[in-house]
Image (tube, rainbow, N blue to C red):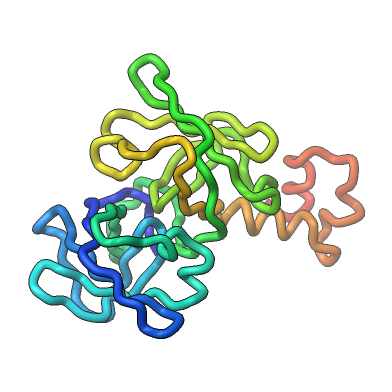
Length: 218
């Protein structure tokens, strides 16, 4: 499990195709970012396992499923990614629950300045819209962000200078693809409220979300 608080960025130094998979070598920008073989690391939000360590470079194998569902299928040497190690038991938890299971790839539709901050709009697949609530959480390229606005199949997030400096978001432009992971709590709440086995099924029709949650035992 991760928090969505990026520890450092990394540079992709190599991408080697191995059948349907790819062996990706990444050099973390921070020398303090270390991981042993077998450790879990979120690479642009996708949970990968460290397969080997050679000097400062970490090597990960991304299987076909990962390549198909995330931006890692477009990974090229020289590219930059966000890195976060798995949360240590008892560690400080400041972001939101991020599993490292990317739901889909979205597309940046606009990047604009807003009183010194930057506002970024992202088009998400229609199937994910139900999990995007204003003031709710979303992980974009592994970064825990708050949804400032949700309209149709577009969400907007506000990026403070610290986020722009510490992550790859400062380099993003309109048209760039990004990894999207929905808030897992929103996913489970939606499942509960739409399940025919829950008390919020047919009996919950016409009720507010809070009334349905109360009826479901929250």
